[in-house]
Amino acid sequence: MTKSSIWFIIAGIAVYFLANQTQIGWLYLFDAIIWGLLVFSAVISWHTVRKLNIERQVLLPRFDPYQLSGPVEDEAVEVRLKLTNRGRLARHFIRVTEKCPFEQAGNQDKAFFISTVKAGSAEVFSYKATCYQRGYYPAATAVIESGGPLGLAVRKRSFVLPVNLTVYPRYYPMEERPAAETTWSEWGQHVRSSSADEFYGSREYRFGDPLKHIHWRNTARLGQFMLKQFEESRQGAVAVAFDTEHNPGAGRETTLEYSIRIAASLARLAAESGRTVDLFTGGTRLSGAGWQEAMDHLARLGSGGKGSLADLTQAVLPDQTVVAVVAAADSGQVPLLAALSQRARKLVIILLEGFAPDEYSQEFYDRLKGLYTEIIRCSLGGLEQCIEELNGALRESDAITPVREM
Image 1: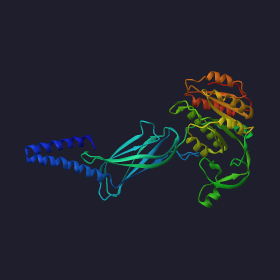
Image 2: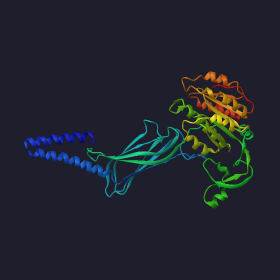
Image 3: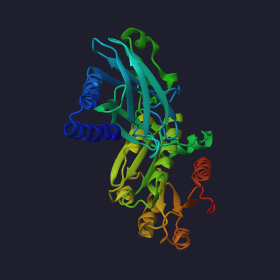
Image 4: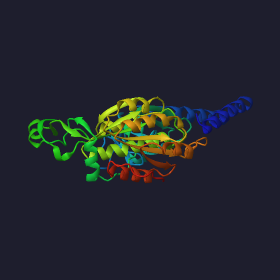
């Protein structure tokens, strides 16, 4: 019911009482017209939304040899909607409103007006959306409504449309250098890898696998992309650890989001080097993860969970390189980091500061300086520079370099 229909009802009641008191015939006729228009609007709007169906599709515009199965943060995608009329008559004056769940708050509502959809046909329309924040989005809501030509009565139908879209965390490019590859190989672990030397079989291709190792003969024989597999080799794997229990900051500028983007950048570097990554996040351990697997884990990671650094202290391999991301507000991690520095071959600590008002970053930093490790200070808004510093730390030799600040 609209404001116009309310005024029509009030007018209809007033004219009826006036006609009843005066017994003037044309007032009765005028009153009948008012109520007839109301009934007509209700029927036509109800009929318009019947037999209408809506579908949605998200189109990814990019191509990447390490392409993920979904978009990353800040990437623009095309959302295509298809409105189908399954009735025998044309439908007119249709409004479609969709709520795009992965857009930034305030930009999620998308509205379209369709003047006519012919019988048995469909109208396709689309819009550009920016994937604001990582996460898994299973469904979106859409509403079809019509008020007819007069707009006196509005009829709505709601749809829950499957999306099944994963928005992956943003990652930053890190240079692949021979020094980094040599170091990682020396600190690595025994795994089966397509970067080894001796071929032993093939398996189905997955997103993130190196295209240069596609087994073309088996691909042609089986009708699907197959990847060569090689005998066991000493392959480097970097370990990344951060806690998810506390998450100071706001929006996308939180310690958890920064930690996830750092881990995603390292996962990308590992994939480009033909290696894996170990993730210790909120008490959850993911070992030997490839590009797609690591990004799936990071995309769906939420706050909560304890003990990632404590678990890592026992689980890290003695000759493994480790990147630990800690918040300056969480000074209780110092003993765990000290134990970790004694076990890991090389430990790089990224200290996130400026996210909470009650942190004592300089005190935390001074306590960490005594450890046999390297520290990179990352302030709020300085993530990209932090990644550059981390890239340099991983490319250096096994000698511990002087503590660096951002």
